[in-house]
Amino acid sequence: MTVSPIAEPRAGQRARLDGQLGTSAIVFMVIAAAAPLTVIGGNVPLAIGVGNGVGAPAGFILAAVILLLFSVGFVTMTPHVREAGAFFSYVTAGLGSRAGLGTAFTALVAYTAIQVGIYGYMGWALDDLVTFFGGPSLPWWLYSFVTMAVVAVLGYRHIELSAKVLGVALVLEILVVVVLDVAILATGGESGLALESFDPANMFTTGLSVSVLFALTGFIGFEATAVFRDEARNPERTIPRATYLAVVIIGVFYAVSCWALVTGVGAGNAVAVAQQTLAGEGNLLLDTTTQYLGPIVRDVVQVLLITSLFACVLSFHNVIARYQFTLAHKGAMPAALGRRHEKHHSPATSSLVQTATAAIVLAVLALSGLDPLVGVFGSMAGVATVGMVLLMLVTSIAVVVFFARRPELGAGRAWTTRVMPVAAVAGLLIGMWLVLSNFTLVTGGSLGVSIMLALVPAIAFVVGILLGRRFPLHAAADDEVAEVAAADRG
Image 1 (cartoon, helix red, strand yellow):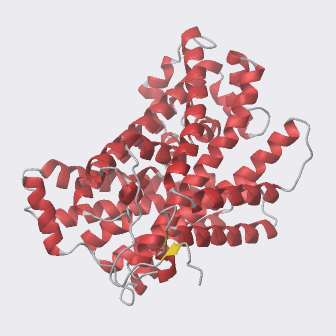
Image 2 (tube, one colour):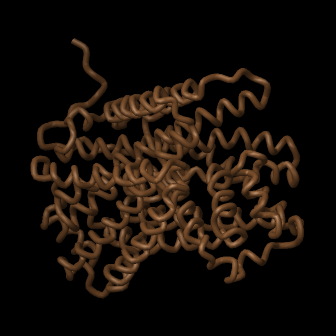
Image 3 (cartoon, rainbow, N blue to C red):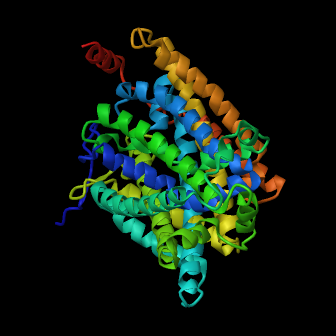
């Protein structure tokens, strides 16, 4: 008789994942999900071209501030949430089982959407790269499915293999942008440092809302630090550190690089150049790289755009697989998804199912004849952005309620358990308004299509709430919360 390499959890026992991921490894995973080079090449021209122009760096700074406000309550509650469920675990502890399942469904929809969107982007980018170097033009979806196969192999294996792959890709893409930023700022750019970017008259214009919108889109996935709790070396210390570091590093990187590109082409030319990029008549990132670092580095950047997208899609694959794994152990998804591979200690079955789900959705979109950028990536990124803001909003409310019901846990910490989480709720409400009021810019579709896409995360949330009675999630037991509180006081 052969023995399956997939370990079945014993009755009443949770098959935990394990690993020795430190702060830097988790930060790598999370920043990779943000695809920084892709954001610099795509979101930054959008923020400059249709946002507040040379004041676009302010949008990335404000987005980072909103996410830091969110992170305070998120991190403060982390020691009291002893499972790798991220948002839905926090919401379950604060608002109850039904809201928790609604949050879980919303997260699965949002992350699946952005992953499928990136597969579409990757298909287009690979075809563009191959044809640029003289190769044949092939259907974009062919490249997408090849990428999916590689992601499936890495996602099936131990998390530390994915972390190493993501680490290499991330270091290279950040390094090349840092070199470009230094080259531009050291030489003074086209016409001196663009101090106009920090003029309030340029920062706080009506287009600021658009810049914040595209900045928030560029942060999708930063909160996934908590998903890797079971695989972290010391989760009570590692997760908070990784969360704050991820937000700060991503925010500073985006803002400085945006300012460097404005300086590189000149404050007086930035809007026109960005709009030419959006019209397909040039490329702000690649053309600026050619000007300051030469054509060879430009080719390197074009290749690194591919590795950036790959790192992003691999990171989201790992996050979704772990969401499903945890939900299976909560009884809200089929038990088979909670199996752990004996050798790789990975959520292997969940990983395979996640690959199949993404393949089905991508196949439907490809058969529909949609454009890989506007039709696939634009629409899916729109769904994910609304989902992300909704998830953070509900989680922040859960933090406020959790500590309000347990005043002993928040004694002497009103600033982190009440003030900052309430400020986060206010900031995220503003963020949601910014996203919805400019939603057609993200999706690239009509108003009717955009409304339907925007409703998808909300529908997932409602469905989860309705199913919450049949498949209840359970927060940590009262004695476990008390144990954590005692450890904190000790």
